[in-house]
Length: 300
Image (cartoon, rainbow, N blue to C red; front, top):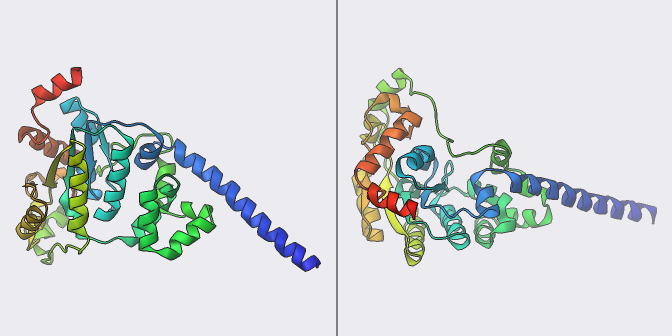
């Protein structure tokens, strides 16, 4: 009898500790200035919504806002797959006033990333879309998250929320220059193709149609690569054509638009200096619309 009482006491203690600990970590998450904490805890109503994986961070928010006088919100994250982006974009559009423009880097359609998807269980208390996606990705992790609230916070995503507990993440971008020997060796990088998982184009299409149904103007782009590295992507033009055919939308190809070596942190990512050059190119090409029109709308 005493043994049974001890067992029940230990179970109750585990349950209580888990719930108290989960509540504390949940509270910290909600106070964070990390973009996904802001997504679920604040009214954002940005003028421009930015979407991508780590390459989407090249949509450098401080420079866009300075040059266009329009507010931005960036849903991009390192390694983000398009099905996870679909859930986050859906939540954003449901919770906020529709942005004027959604700018999406289509090179995020190159992967399935189940590990990252399940790490977003930190935010499942706020999103049925995330709960459903994680359940479809891993029923084991989905059930573990229900059983243990502390388990939700066993992830890099939660650690990022702590990093940005008291500071903005809007300048979260490389601030280093690619090493010269690495830059020189780009011509020797093995040739490769961008793979497109079966789920990618349907998910991209749903994102586009959901945004357009709310009156959002959608622009698809290919963000810059280091030029010599871009030459090693054998199906880059075919990838662009595939996306255009699948979506009926034009894809604006900026893969080789930045040529200054000082603008790159590595083969696939601009640094802050290069991102400013890229944003200036987008503005010059009218991707953000007429600056005069933007200023008029901002004043209103």
